[in-house]
Image: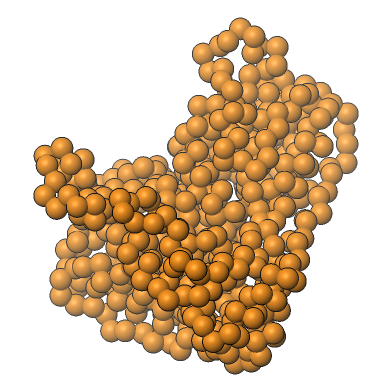
Length: 513
């Protein structure tokens, strides 16, 4: 067998059944091996940031890694921004990055680069395969590294000769999924004492703690103690809607974050990191916890968050679990605003939907109204690197073909990876994209005011305004093979959203707000 066939056979034997690909010459033997060893669905992408973002969305919805197939160092570099988000999401992923044949590197061909150095900052594990005989073990090690809790990015660098050289045929190595580590009993006891102590306690949740099972346990704790629950600002996946325990997202603006923690004597972290400012601001703190507040890091990422929540729920005597009732609003009417879109979305969102939220400045107006919507999942931008929404929606749709995906997309960040629309059309991905077309980088204009620039000058205005010319999102969608329509009021928006939710396949709504 050639090395590439051993690679694919090992992936298939370990349940890796999707690969988001943008290959080049160095990866063609690997690409061909996906046909000679069937079992993996290859999804073509026109930009590597789409491939890495889609693999992130796939992992968030399945809990298992997809592969990416990327072309040498420059191809990997094109995907780094969404690898940053995936690293922050702590999802499993296997990057297969081609490289020149080992005997060709010394001539310094134009595409020669230090692939390992490019991969290292975003990867939990990096290895260059030395030869075809090593592929079976190295691929198994990559899968094991990706699956090791809390989940991580494994980058396997595959020189061309390792792909095409012959190697002895071997049985595929099957990897046992490592279990998360048990929480520290001392940390659990300290958190339980804090929860029972009568002072204000904030519980920050992420990872398994924001799944349905995790929130049910967290709800028991909150009901018994009065603790305030927050999902991390960039939570990986939040189960929401009727029948689930409702949870607010911790606010992005620093002043709102400081206010949310005011008076807290204790912060308990379950699968989440300590709340800090998204950026540093003059005269404002980096750490948002009040002075003297004690941080209880009970279940850092990689520790069993469900076990920690269950132990704490029993320790504080939490029995009841308050869940959200179905509370569907009327369809919004009148002017088209982000608030009105949130209201109509809450009214129409189908059961089992997956909402991918890269609405940025419009995000708070959509998250809140959907609290009482039909049961759904909510995926956020975990690392702050914009351009994740459309690829994440593609990956979620490939992972869950029987569930409707709704991508709430800011127009500025949508331009980073709009090639994902083509892949959605190619794969008939069931995604409704709602573009909040405010013709500006709204979050940057807000931040200018937050920093005291109440009357920005010509250059600041020019670089935060994306009108003149206005983007034609319906035209862009049509050019990518995606149906679309434009709405300028809520009557038109409601009509388009109802139609898009009824049909299968991708559809884009440009909402002029």
